Amino acid sequence: MPFNPFSSEGTSLETGDPVSIAAKQAAKAVAQGTQQQAKAANQSFIDQLYGNVSSSPEALDPTADPLKAATQMQAPPASSSGSSLAPAANPSEQSQLDETRRKLQELQGQHKKNYFESTFGEEAQQKRQQREEEERQMKLQEEEEEQQREEEEKARMSESLQAFQSKGHGKGADQLSAPVAVTQAKTKTEVNRGSSG
Image (cartoon, rainbow, N blue to C red):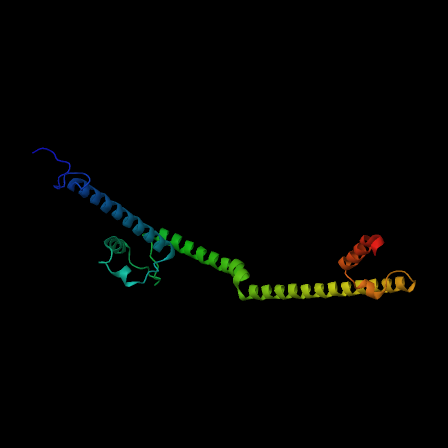
């Protein structure tokens, strides 16, 4: 039988060769299995370091994930201290884990005290509110001082204007209130009249 690339027998690569489909499925299954193993190993390490914190029924159900169930079955029984933390394989590892956990708890306490409480705690909020209130008071005080300076400046200007006018210099009050543009227009009109006006 001659080769026909347009036949629908499934021999063409475009339509899906059964061998290449099976190879792709096998590669996909291997990749998924590897990812699941890596996740299980990471979770096992985290459980040993921080203690087993998963209490979901899925974590305890061996039919949910065979890799997770296998790692749980391989884990040694709980330590005699009664904690729910995953114990180490030998006593030296257990003492190292206990020491690491103790240091981790100390560091968490220091972090909470030094950073979290000072940044987000009630005391920090009170300090922030006090600082905002002080800034608001300072701003109001500066505005009042600015107003006083402006009033003093106006008073000085009016005193100097009155002194100047009392000597007979300057313009009258009606001329001071006229806008500059009006005064300029009057002057321009007077100049342009010439001899006709």
